[in-house]
Length: 132
Ligand SMILES: [Zn+2]
Image (cartoon, rainbow, N blue to C red; front, side):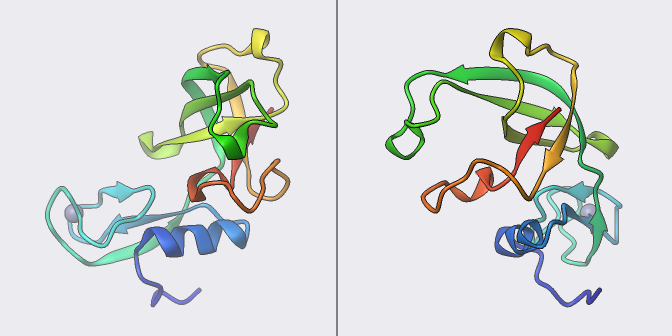
Protein backbone atom coordinates (compact mmCIF):
# COMPACT_ATOMS: atom_id res chain seq x y z
CA UNK A 1 0.00 0.00 0.00
CA UNK A 2 1.20 3.46 -0.78
CA UNK A 3 2.04 5.62 2.20
CA UNK A 4 1.30 8.76 0.23
CA UNK A 5 -2.36 9.10 1.19
CA UNK A 6 -3.00 12.15 3.35
CA UNK A 7 -3.84 11.49 6.99
CA UNK A 8 -7.31 13.00 6.88
CA UNK A 9 -10.90 12.09 7.64
CA UNK A 10 -11.57 11.98 3.90
CA UNK A 11 -8.90 9.36 3.40
CA UNK A 12 -10.19 7.45 6.43
CA UNK A 13 -13.56 7.13 4.69
CA UNK A 14 -11.90 6.22 1.40
CA UNK A 15 -10.40 3.26 3.23
CA UNK A 16 -13.78 2.44 4.79
CA UNK A 17 -15.21 2.30 1.28
CA UNK A 18 -12.47 -0.17 0.40
CA UNK A 19 -13.44 -2.27 3.43
CA UNK A 20 -10.45 -1.27 5.53
CA UNK A 21 -10.29 0.30 8.98
CA UNK A 22 -7.09 2.33 9.05
CA UNK A 23 -5.56 4.47 11.76
CA UNK A 24 -2.64 6.88 11.60
CA UNK A 25 0.32 6.00 13.80
CA UNK A 26 2.65 8.82 14.78
CA UNK A 27 6.20 8.00 13.72
CA UNK A 28 7.66 10.13 16.49
CA UNK A 29 5.76 9.21 19.65
CA UNK A 30 3.83 6.15 18.49
CA UNK A 31 0.39 7.50 19.36
CA UNK A 32 -2.32 5.95 17.20
CA UNK A 33 -5.06 8.23 15.90
CA UNK A 34 -8.42 6.86 14.84
CA UNK A 35 -9.67 8.45 12.76
CA UNK A 36 -6.31 9.72 11.54
CA UNK A 37 -5.38 13.37 11.82
CA UNK A 38 -2.68 15.37 10.05
CA UNK A 39 -1.09 16.62 13.29
CA UNK A 40 -0.29 14.51 16.35
CA UNK A 41 -2.03 15.98 19.40
CA UNK A 42 0.62 14.46 21.64
CA UNK A 43 3.91 15.60 20.07
CA UNK A 44 2.81 17.80 17.12
CA UNK A 45 4.55 15.58 14.61
CA UNK A 46 3.16 15.42 11.09
CA UNK A 47 4.86 12.12 10.25
CA UNK A 48 2.51 9.16 10.29
CA UNK A 49 2.24 5.64 8.97
CA UNK A 50 -1.00 3.82 8.19
CA UNK A 51 -1.95 1.03 10.54
CA UNK A 52 -4.69 -1.52 9.87
CA UNK A 53 -6.99 -1.90 12.88
CA UNK A 54 -8.98 -5.00 13.76
CA UNK A 55 -12.73 -4.50 13.69
CA UNK A 56 -13.32 -6.47 16.87
CA UNK A 57 -14.94 -4.07 19.31
CA UNK A 58 -16.13 -4.08 22.89
CA UNK A 59 -19.20 -2.03 23.69
CA UNK A 60 -18.31 0.64 26.27
CA UNK A 61 -21.57 2.54 26.35
CA UNK A 62 -24.61 2.98 24.17
CA UNK A 63 -27.75 4.97 23.75
CA UNK A 64 -30.97 4.23 21.92
CA UNK A 65 -32.21 7.02 19.67
CA UNK A 66 -35.98 7.29 19.52
CA UNK A 67 -36.33 10.76 18.05
CA UNK A 68 -34.10 10.69 15.02
CA UNK A 69 -32.92 13.35 12.59
CA UNK A 70 -34.96 13.28 9.42
CA UNK A 71 -32.61 11.09 7.40
CA UNK A 72 -32.58 8.44 10.15
CA UNK A 73 -36.29 8.40 10.91
CA UNK A 74 -37.05 5.20 9.04
CA UNK A 75 -34.56 3.39 11.29
CA UNK A 76 -35.62 4.75 14.67
CA UNK A 77 -35.36 3.53 17.31
CA UNK A 78 -31.74 2.56 16.74
CA UNK A 79 -28.75 2.17 19.01
CA UNK A 80 -25.45 4.02 18.84
CA UNK A 81 -22.51 2.77 20.86
CA UNK A 82 -18.93 3.69 21.66
CA UNK A 83 -16.61 0.79 20.94
CA UNK A 84 -13.17 0.01 22.21
CA UNK A 85 -10.93 -1.63 19.62
CA UNK A 86 -7.40 -2.93 19.94
CA UNK A 87 -4.75 -0.46 21.17
CA UNK A 88 -7.42 1.29 23.29
CA UNK A 89 -8.84 2.97 20.20
CA UNK A 90 -12.42 4.12 20.52
CA UNK A 91 -14.95 4.91 17.83
CA UNK A 92 -18.70 5.48 17.79
CA UNK A 93 -20.93 3.38 15.60
CA UNK A 94 -24.49 2.34 14.95
CA UNK A 95 -25.36 -1.12 16.25
CA UNK A 96 -27.27 -3.44 13.96
CA UNK A 97 -28.55 -6.95 14.44
CA UNK A 98 -28.90 -6.89 18.24
CA UNK A 99 -32.34 -6.53 19.86
CA UNK A 100 -32.15 -3.41 22.00
CA UNK A 101 -33.17 -5.27 25.17
CA UNK A 102 -30.16 -7.53 24.66
CA UNK A 103 -27.55 -4.79 24.42
CA UNK A 104 -25.01 -5.11 27.21
CA UNK A 105 -22.02 -3.03 28.18
CA UNK A 106 -18.93 -5.11 27.49
CA UNK A 107 -20.47 -7.26 24.75
CA UNK A 108 -18.26 -7.91 21.76
CA UNK A 109 -19.35 -6.82 18.33
CA UNK A 110 -17.58 -6.66 15.02
CA UNK A 111 -17.19 -3.68 12.76
CA UNK A 112 -19.01 -4.16 9.48
CA UNK A 113 -17.85 -2.07 6.56
CA UNK A 114 -19.83 -3.61 3.77
CA UNK A 115 -23.45 -4.38 4.58
CA UNK A 116 -24.72 -1.65 6.87
CA UNK A 117 -28.15 -0.20 6.54
CA UNK A 118 -26.97 3.11 5.12
CA UNK A 119 -28.35 5.63 2.70
CA UNK A 120 -26.75 8.41 0.72
CA UNK A 121 -27.87 11.00 3.25
CA UNK A 122 -26.15 9.51 6.22
CA UNK A 123 -23.37 11.47 7.81
CA UNK A 124 -19.91 10.19 6.99
CA UNK A 125 -19.18 8.53 10.29
CA UNK A 126 -22.07 6.12 10.00
CA UNK A 127 -20.94 4.37 6.82
CA UNK A 128 -19.92 1.54 9.07
CA UNK A 129 -21.77 -0.19 11.90
CA UNK A 130 -21.23 -2.86 14.53
CA UNK A 131 -22.85 -6.28 14.36
CA UNK A 132 -22.68 -9.50 16.38
ZN1 LIG B 1 3.14 11.99 18.16
